[in-house]
Length: 149
Image: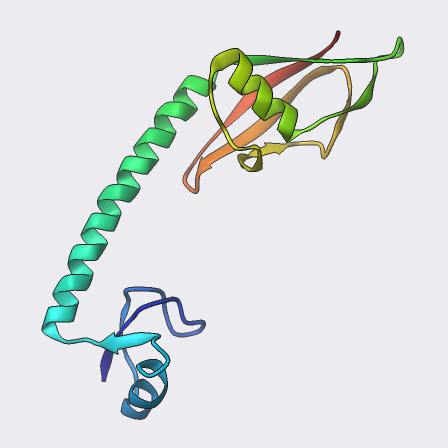
């Protein structure tokens, strides 16, 4: 029996996959639980069209992320922090401050969860790098400088 998965099923397949399963498994488990539908010609055409539209949207999002990554590549971000005479910062610099500085200085609105700093918290003055993951296939690295205010 051929079925089309409506959602990801562990050890079986991913959403919109057309798979072959035993008749009882499909009739008694997958279809009643709403995990799959029968793979008729009509349903196959609908799934193919949905995949095509999803690929188009995904491509558009990926291209937009690539444009943002290209414009972020050579930027040097400056983040001011209160520091002592030894160069230690009072507190730390993390992804929240980097996100806010990107918005203030270059008008890029990037979610703090997409910013990954090499060190968990930066507690010294200096120049550091952070990785920004804009899409699962598109990421870039920015340089930021922490200076004493």
